[in-house]
Each structure stands twice: as structure tokens, then as C-alpha cells.
Amino acid sequence: MVFLDLFRTKKKAIAPRPAALRMPSAPTALVPVRAYDRVFAQVMETVEGISAEEKSQLRDLVTETGSDGLNLGGYFEKGYEVFFKGRQWKWGEYEEWRDTFERLGSFPSNWIDVDQIARLGTRSTSDKLLELRIFELREFLAAEGISFDPDAPKAQLASLAEHAPGLTASSLWARLHRNEEEARQRAEARRPKALYDLLMRTIAYRAKSVRDLERAHSNGIHRHEVMLVLEADRKFIDLARKKNPQAVPPYYPNDFTQLRPIVDFTKQ
Image (cartoon, rainbow, N blue to C red):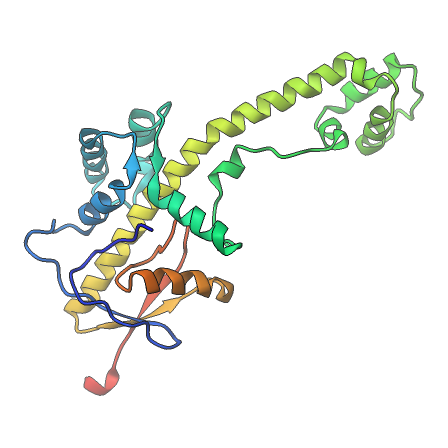
């Protein structure tokens, strides 16, 4: 499992609920100063199919926006078009998390299965017919000599068409299959961009978590509460923090966990 090792400190045990994260020590001089550069380099180590030079160029593209990655609109489309579109590439960290959750038999509430995006699944003939325009259903029924109420709703017309004896031998049936294949191709084309979206958002928001932690540390705040979107996801967060107590949100792709500073007023 790939986890970020953002700071060089001794691992600390997970605090009892509410979970608290102690701030790691400041980075050494050998580590890039900018949080985004550190996170980018570490996450991109798990990306295959993109050269080191291209990764460097992508980082420079993000840097040009001046937002430490949070202004995705400034680089998202160009980064995809130039470095990822039409390429065979994979993100090892994503695949390892997916395999881990599959072994657990459950997935986090906000997990996005990019492979599912490319799978339309099995759809009924009725569902396919309902995607047609109403005049197409009327034309088919009229051609088949099947009587129908001209004012009937689409669902009723689709039901009549579904049970028509000549449906599977008709041009309408061929059109349904053609529509299905086109939809499959569109879904398949969305997969790499969906994975790219998860990749760049993970880098951007992990870098933000690092910056926030370092800023809090400079202000004397060393403990943070882990704020979950849903309590049902706690087991996944606990797993990530057990593997690496120094990990920061998002702990896995599309994780919305946040860290809330815990201020000790007794020391003020």
C-alpha cells in the first residue's frame, strides 16, 4: 500500500476518539520547501506511463496558476490534453486502495470506481426503449400494425414495443444496439479522465492539508481532530492512519476527511 510519508518523525499511536493527529516536525533542508511540490513528487512516484520530464512539466503548469494546485480550472483541461489523453497510464496508489477495499468487502461512501464508469451494466430492453424519442416508438408500433392511443405516455408505448413480435428483427432493434455501443464507447472514454481528476484533486488537497498542518505547527498547535463526513467511513480512515500515522487527508482518492485544530487554551 502506498501512503505518503510527508515528514520525518517517529510514528505515533492513534489517539482514542475523537481521533487526534500530532503535527510532524518541519521538513528538512533536503526536502522541497513548497508543500505542493513535495506531495506532487510523492504521489506521482506511483503513476506509470508518464515520463519524469512530463511530470515535471505538469508540475510547472500547475505552478503557473499560482494557486498551489487548488485552482484546478487553471490547469485541469490542459494538463489532461497534453499529458494524459490517449495514453496508457495507471495510478498505483489508486489501484492499491481499490484492491484493499475489495479485500475488505466494502468501500468508503465517497469512493469512485473508475472502472464502473466504463461499464454500463446490464440494462433491460424496456430501459433502452425509454431512451428513444416518443415519435420513434409511435413509428415502430404503426409499422408493426400495433394499435395504440396517440396520447399514450412513453412508458406505455415502450411496453407495447417491448412485447411486439417483430421487435428483434426490426431496424429499431438495430438502433438500440447501436445506441448501446455508442454509450459504451463514451463511458470508456470517460474513465481515464475520471482517474486523472481523482489524481490531481488528491495531490491538491493533500498539499493543502500539509500547508494547514505546518501553519498550525508554527502557531504552536500540535493536535488535530479528524473530522469525518460519515461515521461509517471511520474504519477506512483508521486503516489509513494505522498504516501511516503521518498520512494526511485525503487519505485515499476522493476522501473528504478534514483536520480540525485542537487549541489548548490552558497554555495561553
